[in-house]
Amino acid sequence: MSDQLTFQDPVKRFPDISPPKQDQPEPGLEVELIPGTDRGEQSYRGTGRLKGRKALITGADSGIGSAVAIAFAREGADVALSYLPAEEDDARHVCDVIRETGGTAVPLPGNLADPDYCQQVVHDAADGLGGLDALVNNAGRQIAVEEIEDLSDEQWGNTFETNIRAMFRVTKTAVGYLPAGATIVNSTSVQAYSPSTHLLDYASTKAAINNFTKGLATQLAPRGIRVNAVAPGPIWTPLQVSDGQPKEALPHFGKNTPLGRAGQPTELAPAYVFLTSAESSYVLGETLNVNGGQPTP
Image (cartoon, rainbow, N blue to C red; front, side):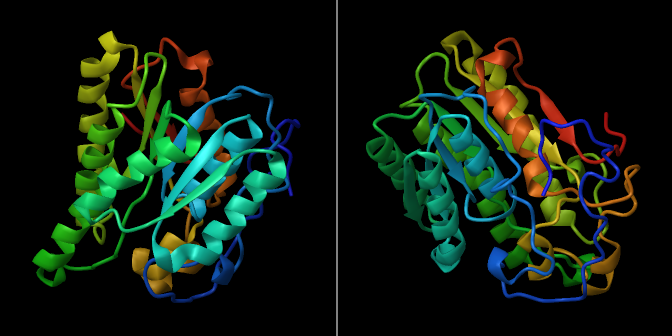
């Protein structure tokens, strides 16, 4: 495990993994991923930057969302976790880590493709946490399809439903709770700028998230609510093995970055912490790229 506060070569800070070909049914589970990921359970040390904050994080059971949840707790925040019911085992682990840290964890299983759940999860998070002043829209759906002729209307619609429509619905409800000083951080992707040919629907939603973030940031700024985004590059998560990538591509995942390796979820967490903390008080409408050095606009 690596400590985020020590001086280290970023090329070698985490292992250069070559994942074996593997397959999991959607949505994919952290407990079955080979190799496992570093989500910060041992490596992330907080400094109190989010003390007293009350955060709702979607897709918080595994991958990037779980690393953000753990980091937020280590920084002093209480966290409500949104995740699919099928991901209960992963979510339970994250809740245990948060509680061992001394924070409150509120598990809220459900499907963000359901418009009613998008509203209810916000109400339940605010009730469970005693308020809400931070939102991280992280949940996403990614299914690789090589040819446009094979990309069905159903998949296109399901991807947009989960990745951007749910974000709109959750955010619209959350704004009713967020006071001045609150923050929203959305997960976009390097795919918004450099779309892979097999991820047309996913990449399109990520570009939409960039625009949604920038427009909403301008709209909410006078109310003292800051909106920003984080754009991950190739990060090793269960998303990749549950049809998020072609199976033959898995052993080479992330090796085309300037750093020469895939990122670990815990490497994303400090970006979300920064954009949620008061340290970024003059940062609005920003898309913070964490992608191993891939060029972006």
